[in-house]
Length: 159
Image 1: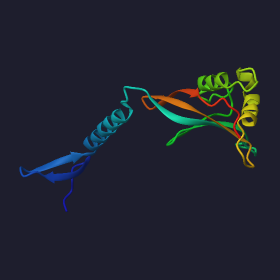
Image 2: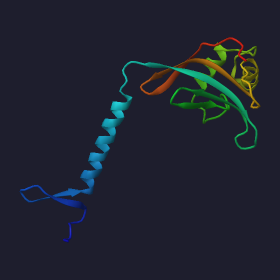
Image 3: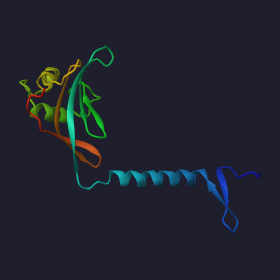
Image 4: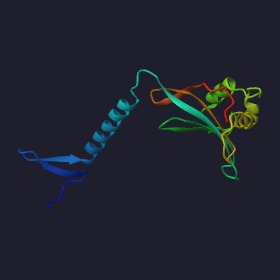
């Protein structure tokens, strides 16, 4: 065993002598590989469309309690929100507005009526079972891996 210079992770004998590989080189290569992989994953030039369903359900309790709105596809699940317009954590306010405009459920489609809309949605698109929930089908539009829009297809009363 021999002592390596400071900042050197390991040495390679390439036939012409020892080549030192530093921590900085390893980090640079790792960052380049991650950037290349991320570009490969998100480099979808054409927007894609996936079948999805809008799921509104009630969770009893204090911490996570209340009505929640999810968009679920085959492989992913997006928490659209519990609060509309009031929460700084909800990044999908425009999608919430789009959904309540497409499926008004007898409620004026404005941000102030979002809680009433979720209750009306769960009654209109009720699914059997003990849980208070409603499900409606549609299409989710993705661009470069990000959720961009929702088109609701199922306007009928289900159940």
